[in-house]
Image 1 (tube, one colour):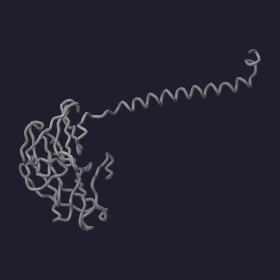
Image 2 (image 1 turned 120 degrees about the vertical axis):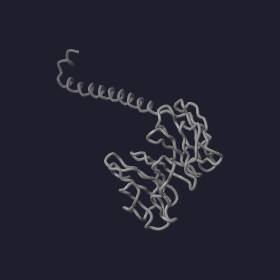
Image 3 (image 1 turned 90 degrees about the vertical axis):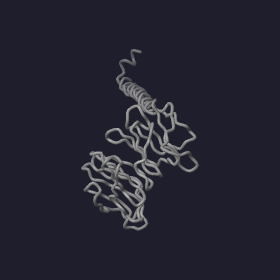
Image 4 (image 1 turned 180 degrees about the vertical axis):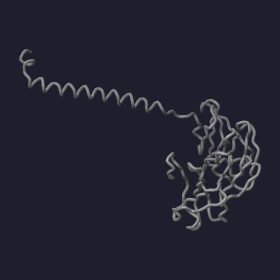
Length: 236
C-alpha cells in the first residue's frame, strides 16, 4: 500500500480511470432522466380505435373536437370536455360529413365546420348548428386578423366578412384547380396551394389585397397539398 501511494505512475494512471467511470455514471443518469422526461410528454388520447381521425381542434380551453372519415370509416365530428377521456358525437344534419382540417373557431369563439355539404356554424360549441353555406364542398377554414372567414375548395376560394351570412368568390379558376390549403403570411398576405389540370394552375398562389386579386408565384409544374409559414416568413 505504501508503495502504491508513493508511486507517481500508479497515481497518474488511476485518476483518468476513476474520472472516466465518473463521467460515464453521470451520463447514464442524465440520459435516463432526459429519456424519462421525453416519454412523459406524450400520452395517447382515449379515442375510439374503430374511427379514423382526420382533424382535431383544441383552440378553446376545455374542449376538444375531432372529425373522422376515410375509406370504410364513419364520418362525423366528436367533442370531448375532459381532455379526451370521453367523447360524444355531434351532427349538423343527416348529410353532415366533415372534411380534413375544417374545424375552426372564429376570433370571437363561434365554431365553424366545413363539410362536403357546405359550411355549418355553431354559437354553443357544437350543441346546435346552422348551415351558412350551401353550394359546394368546403375544405380548410381560416380567419384573418379582422375575423374575415376564408375557405378553399374545388375551383374557388371564398370569403365571408360577416361570419358566414354572405360570401364572395375571391378566386375562381374555372374548373382547373382544386385548392387544398391556405395560410396567412406574417405581413397579412394570403397564400393558397392546390392541384390543377393544367401547368399554369398548379403551385403557389398569393394575394396582397385580402383575396381580391391573385398571382401564381412559382412551382407551377407540381401539384401541392399543404402550406405552412414559420415565424421568419419562410414558406414550406
